[in-house]
Image (tube, rainbow, N blue to C red; front, side, top):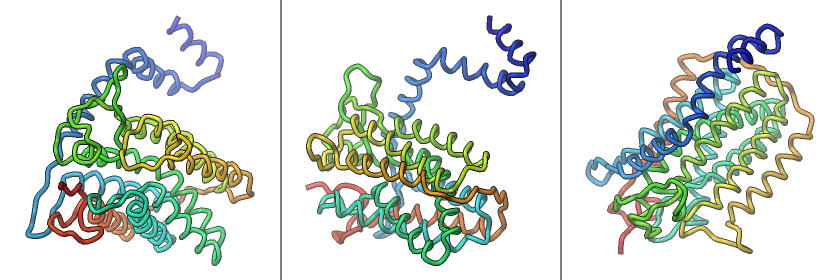
Length: 332
């Protein structure tokens, strides 16, 4: 039946040969999905217990610096490849604004004497939106193009960045009994140090997020290749990422997350941004065009973005009591 179905797809001209060929590994993954998922969860557990650091005087470099750098480097490289090197300064403005506001947002919402430098996804999103609004005042077309590029690249960067979250222990899940979970025992992980879930089997919500973001990336990349409009791509990103985040929050177990009317604050934000995405997708925009160009200057820009992300998200001063100094939880 499989062979006949594949042959009929080709003979009737309904599908290209690559569709049928790719269908084979996809079918194998679906057939063995349970085993593959369990092995993936075990790998996530090993990564979640792998926290390590190197200290140079007052400075500490945590091992998840690698994932912080890779996520930012690949994300910015992809944005610059899509929009072209002539928009490198504007891209840097949006990225830097997002990082700064992500830190400020995280501290305002979740920060304390014990948690000195948390980062928040919605903070990055609001910081990037603010920078795009400023750009739109001067050049609306440029702002829309960069918005669409960041919307497409962000899910891939976030999926990679979730590996950093596994090591750091942030964005973790609540206890699970039936679903495959991870057990974190490393004392430096936020799971143990802040949420007091040391040795408890919890949902691997970082994996849930990574899987959802990879699917969103595939869908948005296809829209970019098809020449969709900038506002449609930006709106679709807000819709899909908000739906994924709303569902993911139902499995999260972070102690410091505020709740209102039995919903996490991030679920309320997801609702608002989903509606915003619907509205944005209905605004007329320009068709996207793939520049497909990288220069030495843009590659250097991506490297600098990677270093900046690693500096802010994976390098700290563990012995300092100052605000924004520590990435790990202070123990009483």
